[in-house]
Image 1 (tube, helix red, strand yellow):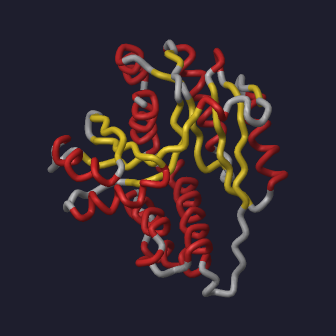
Image 2 (spheres, rainbow, N blue to C red; image 1 turned 180 degrees about the vertical axis):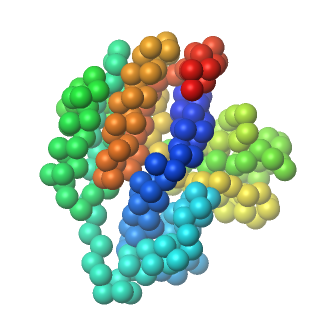
Image 3 (cartoon, rainbow, N blue to C red; image 1 turned 45 degrees about the horizontal axis):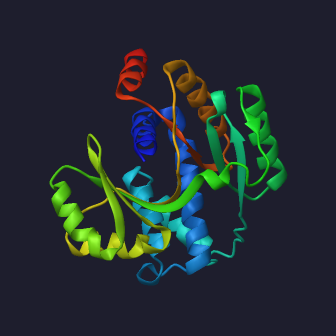
Length: 252
């Protein structure tokens, strides 16, 4: 799980760039539309929509954009929102596994953009199922460390179904079964503990430790894939030691 955490931390630092913000907004808006379409616009009965809006607000998506996305997704504007979820599997440098989750209104476009990014950046597509078995579907809740302690978080979430709490530099990451995500998130709220995001993600069962050169190649491929508006999430099984992390950060 440390590999996932370090990747999340690295990407959070790199993602706060104006040139990437518009694409980030578009993907967050798409999540809101899908959540509203699936569960309606009533926040009290749609926890998935609550989490999608929370994540968008934490990323400074304007409230007007959020409100329009909710109405559009719920069918209140007369517009039709039709997205399909597609999961592609592949490998980056040195056998690092990738799960590429797309949310798209054009499957052919999504497939072409993923394959192009992979082929141009040292990646290779894999057969369905050949990579996915290395990952488990988990709920991940990111809690800011400021103002709370690991013991506070543990006390709040253990009885709600949390499996593990991982301490990072500035956050605590709470891991749950996917089905326990809402209950665990609610337990944090009941305890008065704020959270940054609550998502269902794919966590690797076995990680591959990589050196700095491999990490650069993996990051370049992931950046190319994320340039596609259809790519929503990318999951990988690489692990980075603190020494390699420090080397990469020194180069930024």
